[in-house]
Image 1: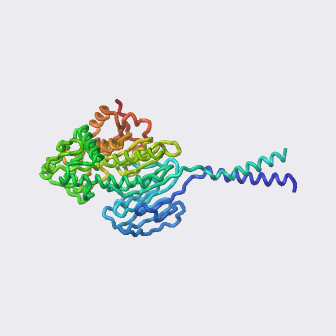
Image 2 (image 1 turned 180 degrees about the vertical axis):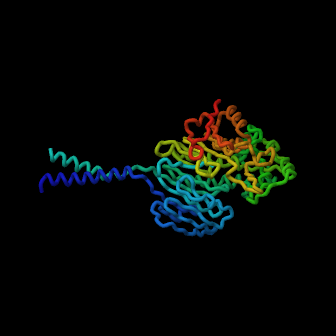
Image 3 (image 1 turned 90 degrees about the vertical axis):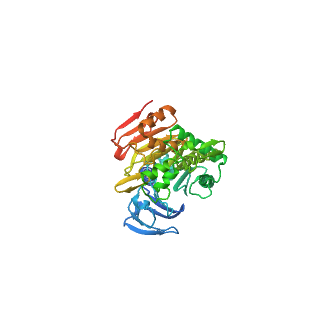
Length: 124
Length: 336
């Protein structure tokens, strides 16, 4: 093969690599994962960024049950048989610092994302 | 020349293969249900200490909680014993010091009032004026006479360390983390936040202050090696006949404190001080809180007033940013 062909092939590979690098470095880190914990143990992991059709499911534990609704980029507890209903009042969440907590049922739903500018915790 | 260029590009292409590798600090997160709340610990680097942290939480809860039958505090409240273990005695003595310092705006003997309003059992009710008057006779930290690890009390005196225990827990956990060589950690003790060092990327931790109106945040604080504790009437309350009653009771009146503040956030190195002062400042209001700050200068604070304004002590001037609904609020910096 001619040297010229080789150079074109190599240049092509180089260009592809460069584009790949740029994508890796500059893509927005929108990995929004919702993790569901019962008694501190992760029982389910949902990629909120890839949700196309909203859906619901119920978490049944020894302490009681909570019904969770999932939509693109956000998650909420929509009904529960706990005493205080705090988990329902928290409403939709979509960022890490603001988890849904159902104290009586020991359920925590937390968003794991590396979006820059997010706060680390909320004082309340 | 052409060959040189080809080799060069080939080499660069190889280099590009490695760009996917980015260093990421290893962190471990634990969720613990204790002290009537949910705690979240995030530790970077050496996370082997996590079980020890959890054990410390349990130990302190079993020793200090009024609701744990057989805890030192529960036994003392029943009149079963007048002495505390050295750790508990030290905590109670320091708590009493804050009661004195704030002239009773913080009062650890507020326990009978909390029970009458139903805040301890979540069976809310509004006590009558006569009932409150009767209970107020039992509420006064000066009824406790301390002598070493012995604490004598008047009849009916009961203590609740809820306003200081989490603060002290934070202090202890941070000490343990430091001793084990951890440089970066974030402890969230049910909204009572303690930061060790900086974020693993070297930037200050970003701690939001909750908007008392519940829609997003009021502001964001950038902190290093600090506790951030907020007290507000919006946290725990109930509504009866259209009136909202919250759990931060004024020990002098027995009624929910109404000092013109929606919330107070206290920032400082000592978590227990922050915990005590956030409650006390909320009860005593802006003017007296400023006096405390000017006298002691051992904490910084952000005050959100009922009028919708923000007041902050000068030490937080460069680390606080108002956001969301509060982005255009009037901000007044308190100076010495």
